[in-house]
Structures are given as C-alpha cells and as structure tokens.
Image (cartoon, rainbow, N blue to C red; front, side):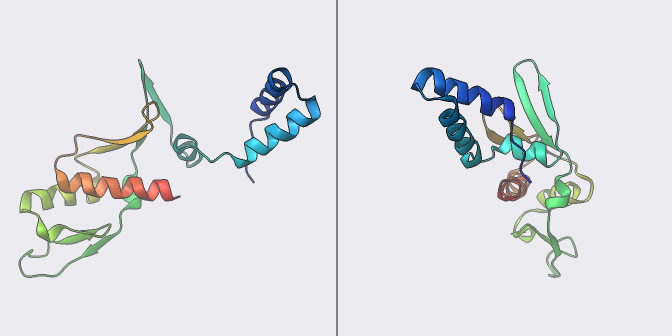
Length: 149
C-alpha cells in the first residue's frame, strides 16, 4: 500500500483554499487527487528500495553500493577469450581488449573500479572513477534497471 505525506496534502489543500478561493472540502479533494496522480521520483524510489542519502556541503547523492545484484552475467566460451569472456547485462566483453575485460571482471566479481550514484540535485545518474567505456556501459544498464523498478 502506498504511503502519502498527509502534512503535504493538508498544506496543499490550505494553499488551494487561500489562493484559489476553494472551500476546505474542495481543496482537500483536489489535493488528494494531485497526490494520487503524482509519479514517484527517482530519489523516492531509491529510498523505498532501502538506499541512503549521502550529503556533504551542497552535494546530495544516493550511492548504489550493491549494484552487482543488478548484473546478469553469462559466460562465453570462445577460443579467443580463453575463458575470460562474459556477457554482462547484454554487453559482450569479447569485443574489448584484455585490460577492459579484466576491469569488467573486477567490477562483477568484487565491485572494484567504479561507483554508481544518483545526484538528487541534478536528478541524473553519474559514475565515479568509471575506468573505461565498458564499465560505463555496464553501469548505465544498472541505472536503467533501477529506473524500471
């Protein structure tokens, strides 16, 4: 069951009474209608999923430290990769040089190499120390999965 911020709904109702000249009953009906039709923001979604807000100075971010659980990994058995090839969230690592493949394996196995976070002020996703185009591509697939939840 979805939870609503009753304080915000009541404040919005009184705002409608004062500014639009509605009676309190009409204001409450309209405020509830607005609250029910509002779509959940990405910040609210991440908080609902159990992630915490990190703030420092004027920065407000939500770090996704457990992004490995959003990775779908399949092994590829081609002679060129010598057992190192993988398909991660639909991205084939066989096409990349061995250094990029090692970075991708470190990311999948241990979470090394990059951090994915949502910037609440800019309302967009960012990578910290992405390490290369392959890692960025993989992390953007994780962001897409989180947005789809």
